[in-house]
Length: 172
Image 1 (cartoon, one colour):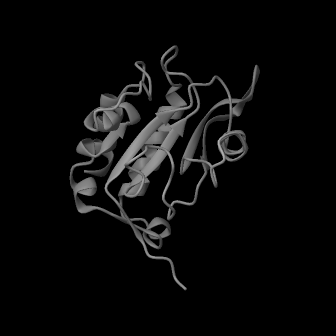
Image 2: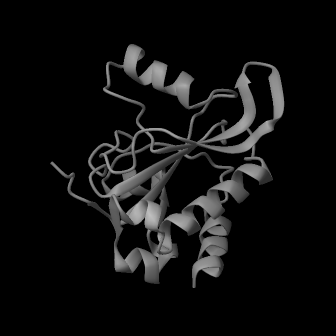
């Protein structure tokens, strides 16, 4: 039986609020620590520290796929059904994301939003996300504030306006 394609209306950006990690360590925490079926996020963007105090420059900005993109995530309670969840490793309450992480995020989201046969086989991008991406890319905290809830995710140092502007320039 063929899976039904998911309609994607928004992109939601998170930070891990940790100084290190990768998709497998986050998956382990979500599955074994929280009892979820898989990692919450569809995509994880690394900061070069898969392990504490062990920097690998080849991992800086690396994009790792988490939960399959055609499956509903578990990253934003009440808004998982029509969104893609992307987490950047780091604590952006304390630090800024690395430029390489932002570049990877912007490139990945731009490819996702544009017509792309790899993604189009499993998801459909809403036309409003394609036409006005800056109005459909949020931090976790922005989405929660619309729902009268609170989280500081993706952190006060996350440059969401810059990200929106750069993605819009790439796809429009």
